[in-house]
Image 1 (cartoon, rainbow, N blue to C red):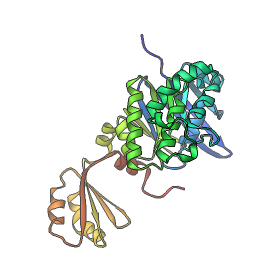
Image 2: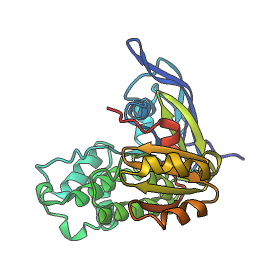
Image 3: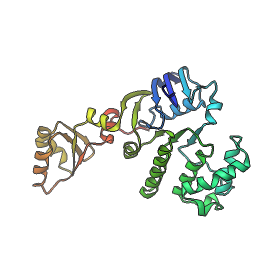
Image 4: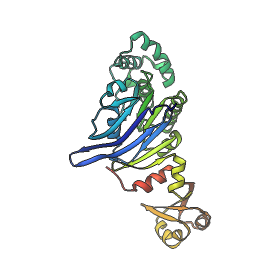
Length: 306
């Protein structure tokens, strides 16, 4: 017997005026996976999340969340969903413990049950010793961990994470990643949006890359890398990088792309590039394996999005 998808969308469309921001999306989340929804600014990610939560009505298409049709029974679905918003919206007038208690009441959970859940959530967030601290005294990482703990107050089956580590230092980011892995081990299903490609590559079993309201690629991170990008990358820096690429790099790499003073050379065999660069004192270089960020930039472009 097959298990129902925690979240599924088919033919999803949404326009504002003459601008269609979601253009016929189809995707299905598998139980217990972390599914990444990636895209540049303006790709339609936030609108897609709002549609799936029933906060915005679609123009057409269908959404099912935890077996409930959305938006028709979005409220019932949201009782079993946790949401980590892009920006912390903790109540500064209350302590850490009070924030969890008051938020839990929105789900109709009895106070005695909430008080029994809170110690485990504080331990999960690494905030057990700060339970009575005011929000203003917390660091950015602490606030983010509290926001994650708050999203779990209703023991959700499905968790939406909208850029959960934006603005955090590397140490805090790694702590959040470890907590998210714990959730996956518990069988939770995660829908993650992020601009950190390393984050998606580390956490997601599958990703969908969006641009201009459409999914332009979907699959496992390593499979997408193998499908779209040569396996080796040499980044070349310096004022003479463009000239070097025109005279030498383009003959020994499958592709060379320029961003500012940096040349990205994509190759199956980087040895000739590296051998030549090792004898040049005017250029610096970095040799690495291809990553999900290379796929993202190839498919969505390197120009800035506002």
